[in-house]
Length: 469
Image (cartoon, rainbow, N blue to C red; front, side, top):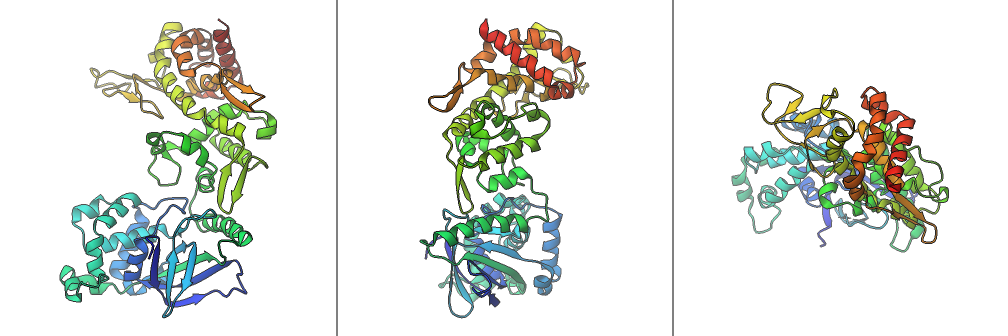
């Protein structure tokens, strides 16, 4: 049997008749701890818009398992899983296939915290206290589960050459697994060549996932990521940066996906309206990430810009692809400018360190909160910085770098006319000799600077002037 397949046995299983749901099959029932173990070995949360992690909720679920396990199936809504194929066998057994398809990504759609809590509860019988304490999120849980698979196999006596005595010797408490878990399984009622049904399955898969997770606040960026709108951009970014971005809720990223999507609008804004459909207000890149996420989604959904096969979206517009190709350079230039800006400002206009809210690296000063003993880090690539400050000071200049982007009507693509990193190295001080005036007129308030349309015009003028010189 394939590593993506598993046979599980349900208690009191109920199949929804095809006359009620002709395109999507649905099985409901209960599973015991041993069959949960089998599921856990192949289950993935890639289909879920968020990752479960340690919380008060998971602790409450664990308390129920420990104190009231026989009523667990009454007290929990259980788990919802999707599979690419489901074969009905005898004696309430089902062969489930979790292999990804072009239409949907099977796996855990809802009940992530239930799954997390139950799996961690089972691991307590085979793992040390230190291992259990180290489990704080889905990734650490899965790692611990894989490391203890052999012991879990003995615990449930699923390996044929192991005796039940071995399992009892491993844990006399294994007999206490009396709880049952509500489970719901959905799958497409179609073969590989039934395009219409499979497309409907993919769209329904997405809608069901979002609907079932409406009991928590999923950001629009998380939902859009789940639909594949960010896949093309993600594939362009370095792995070390991708790991730092929270594309999925609770994914552990320190950078919000909306921050990256907002900056991606800079090169996209240089495209003709025939590709993007509406003017982009680049001032909102600073103060309205929600606007940025929404307009990015509208561009992706615009007719002719991409194709959707079931749940999966694929960007096909080459002009937009060329714009997204500039995003990694923009993010790196953002970090470079963040690090260079204070010194360039000092040389051109004044004393940046005196501005309220600006912090300075100085390992010798330890009793003043304005100073830090450690170097600061830039937002995306973690460059060393001697200053920490609000990005409202530099966002108009970052947007102004669009002056370095040109559109080629013949090839229907955008590109940089000048290397933006080299431009910052060579011309930032000259740009700030003009732009610094804006900072003083705004009373050194980064909020006023970042929200004022005139500031962006001044930044663009200063960059164009430097280009001419």
